[in-house]
Image (cartoon, rainbow, N blue to C red; front, side, top):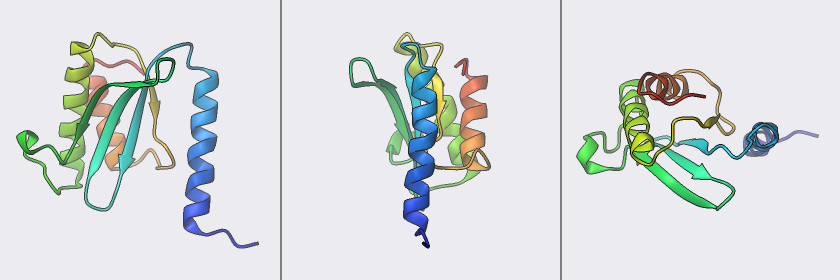
Length: 119
């Protein structure tokens, strides 16, 4: 009954997302994805099914292309907070996916909070 790492990750991601959707009350979702080389975040309106704002280390103008560090995550968090305000969003809920709230994900969340997002 051994589960692979991927199966455990998917179970954890779905468990987190389902718990958050119960408490959503129409608020947008701040969804984080982290890979080995990049980190990206989207502000998603699940009611309408569209992305309100996004930020990623793949964007050349941010100067973090190909970097997956705590500093890059902090810059992405500040950027998404700025873009969320421009889209008229101040309150959302944080969907960390299957990733632990530690290190890069935590740095991104703290920078978004400092930028003015509430979750």
